[in-house]
Length: 478
Image (cartoon, rainbow, N blue to C red; front, side):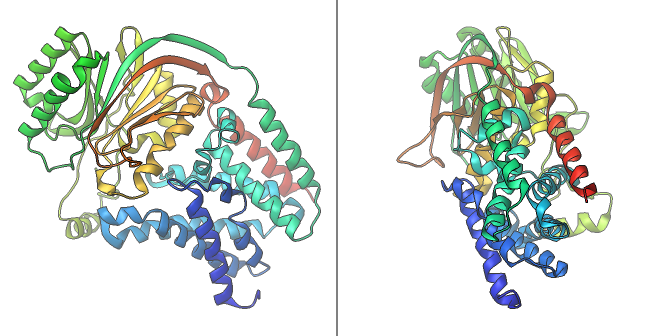
């Protein structure tokens, strides 16, 4: 069997399919504990073939999981899938270079390092971190209080290698250590956490359900005022949230509209947050604007989407020209430089925009500035009725666990919902078992509860140090 390349290619694709179904929106999270085993079983002493099998398996997985990108970029998204699959290829190439008695923890550490590189290199893309599969598993996901989501990936890869070693009838000392490690991880999640209650706010999350650029500025203004005056005001919220893309122009150019919003805020004693564009010094920003009576504050998105909001490699004319020919437009937004925290009645909150919530370090920076809870505003209408909005939304589960804060999300067309500080999904807007492309408002009395987690204090660095020491010991050990 090991000499049959085509049969082995089919077997490694089985790993791709199993992993694909372990991610949102599917509920087969338990596949992630064994999905890599078919890939491991066909790998052997031929390092080149190990690399190729990893490349094939990774490419199929990312091609399936990121298919929603076809709505935005056509089949060019396959280039991204190919780039990401290289990390799988490097992984399968490296782990079989070492002795099998080291494979469990060394393999898990290698995957951990590769995911960190993927999350940061070339602006980073931690969209499909392996740990995301545990979004519904409130037992394993709690480990993120200490290790972050990348630590969950470490456990899952180690679990796959643990089962693989048993299937191969190789009884290793690391198997025993792995069992102790899992027990330890489970026990530390039961340690009590310092808890603080800062009050309660009534929040209204608006899901207006219109595709971007389909509405004129006047229609955007009418819809925003409609929700404030007709659909929301009778609930008497403290803050009304409108998602990214709710207003398509520079809101500060509409003086009459701004004055109307300030007047509504002052008379009804609530804050209004709107996802919009703003302009300053001839630069446009993707922004969240918070209107609290006469006071107006702005957060400008810091982590922009490559090729959606700016051109990665724009210094090279051929890159710009190729993109212009393919896309027909040239995006050039300016990134913000301040992790702005808004304040309402002495309670502080932050508003990551679009996919900023998939980057743990962005939430960490907001946390350093005193954020008590988070509101993600996003426009996922680009993705259509696909797995994309689900994959995006469930990253909030891990940001909530890591930070010990509530995470709320308002989506232009969905998903809109609330995640508690321990990763529990409190509420999601739905209609006839559907979460996308309908119009509604989610009003929630939010207890502003803060848990002090190990990760919120120290970040990824303790677990990174653990993996570095572990890797060094295993490589140097004869």
